[in-house]
Amino acid sequence: MGKTKKRMLAGVVALGALVTTISGANSLVWPMLIDGKIEERVTTIFTYQNQVSAALAQSIVEAETDNVEVLDALYAVEEQLNDACGPVQEAGRRHIDGEILSSMLQINVFNTMADCEAKTDEVAYYVRLARGSRAEAFMRVFDTATD
Image 1 (cartoon, one colour):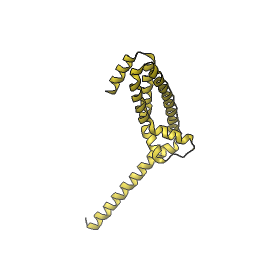
Image 2 (cartoon, helix red, strand yellow):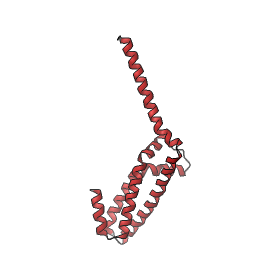
Image 3 (cartoon, one colour):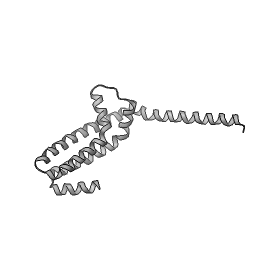
Image 4 (cartoon, helix red, strand yellow):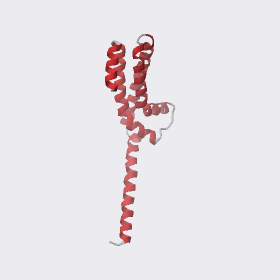
């Protein structure tokens, strides 16, 4: 095979790889832009996460007066929830403000929505445990889960 044919073949392969990469990126963005089911799921996660955050905030207020020993654990859980659900919260705030979501934010939401939902379920469990049982039981479960 001559040098010219090798260069042409390399150019075709490079072009094919570029087209595949671009179409792969579009396939990540288009489902968020088009698929209403994903938007509904994100809305459900956003709403649920806000409800759990409100219950967590109430548990923190209660712990400040009644159960100081679980306060640090509740703050840690709150930080974990905020980290896991940051993109979902940002998208929710922007949507409420009437802004158009960037493709990058939509990709971040799509990639983190399952983790946000799982962390929200976990935090809801901790809130129920903190409210319904003794501080020692809560700390034992929390310590086991974070190790």
